[in-house]
Image: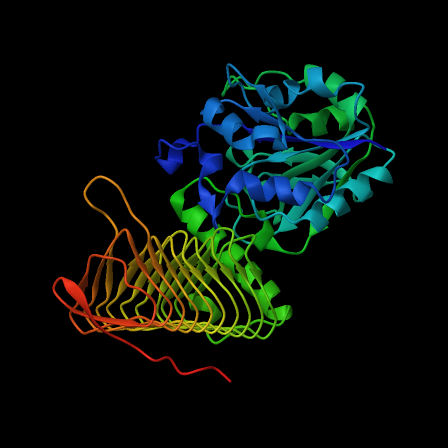
Length: 453
C-alpha cells in the first residue's frame, strides 16, 4: 500500500509578526516544518508533498530534496490547498495523510496509529481528536450514536451547547486517496470567509452515508499548534521536555532538566552528566562519561569520552577523550583538542590542533597553529597569526615549554624541546632543544632534554 502525506504550509502566519515564513521558525534548533516531516517519515512510504504559498521560495529552498512542493496561489483555504497536490498524487497513492506544518509536536507513532485506523476503516477518512478544557480555537467533534463522526463544527459558528464539547479536531487526517480528490471538488466556498475548508469533507462523507472514524489521542501537548510567538514558546518547552526525557531514559543525567537546553538531533552517550544552564545545539555529538557545565554552550561540536567542560563555549570544535577545559574557555571553529589536553580559564583556540597531553595555561590565544604532544603553553601566550592582510601558521613541536606572556609572531616554527623565556617576542624559527629569550627573542643556549622511558 502506498502511503504519502500532504503538508499544508502556505499560510502567511500574520500573528507571528515576522518576515520569516512561519513554518521556518526554529523549534529546538530545527524549523518547525522539519519536526513534522521527521514524524511523517515513520508513517509514509512515499515522499511527502508540501503545499507552499507565503514565503514559497524560502520554504522550497530549505526543503531541497526532502519533499516535493506545489504552489497554492491564490490562497483560498485549507481545502483549496489540499487540491493543489492532486496533480502529483492522483493514481500514485492509496492513503494520504493531510496535516499542518505548524503542528510540530505530533509524533510518528501518532501518525502510524492514524494510518492504521484508516486501513481498517470501510469509510473514506479518519481524523485525530483530543479532549481538552481549553479549545484553543479548534473545531468541536460531534459524534453519532455509533461513535463515528457526524460533523466538525468550527468555533466561530458553534452554538453555546456545541462550544461545551471538549472533544476537538486536531487537524490531522488520513484519507482514501481516490475518494479525497473527488470530495475536494465538492467543497463549497464558505460564504463568510470566501475560502474552501478541508473540514467540509466530513460533511460530504456523512451525506454519502460513509463512516468517518476518529482516533482519540490522550496527549494534548502533541496537538499544540503554532500561530503566535506565545504558542511557539509553549511548543519549545514541550519539545525540550520530550528531548530531555529521551536522553535521560537513554542514560544521560541532568541535575536540572528545566535549565538544560538540547536541540533536536543532538547525540549524547550514556553516563554523561549535564549540569544546569547547559545549551547544546546543532550537529553536536557527545560521547560517554563526560561532565558538562554548568553555564556551558556547545554548538556543532564532537566530544569524546571522559571529558570535563566547565563554564565554556565550544563552536565547531573536536575534543578527543579525557579533555579538561574551563572555566571560561572558548573553542572556535576548527579547534581540535586531542586526548588528555588541559585548557585553562580564559583561553581561546581557533583553527588549531593541540596534540595529546598539551597543557594550555590561562589567558592564552592559539590561532592557526599545530601544537605538538606534551607541550606546555604558559599563561598569556599569544600566536600573532594575522598581519593585517593574511593569517599565518605557527608550528610548535613536542615537549616544548612556552614561557608566560610569550608572543609567537607567525609564520613560525619551534622545534621539539624548545623553550621560550617569559615575555619573549619570537619572530624567527627556533631550533629544537633551544632556549630563546628577550624582545625580539634570541637563542642563549642549547638544552639537554630528558630521555623518555
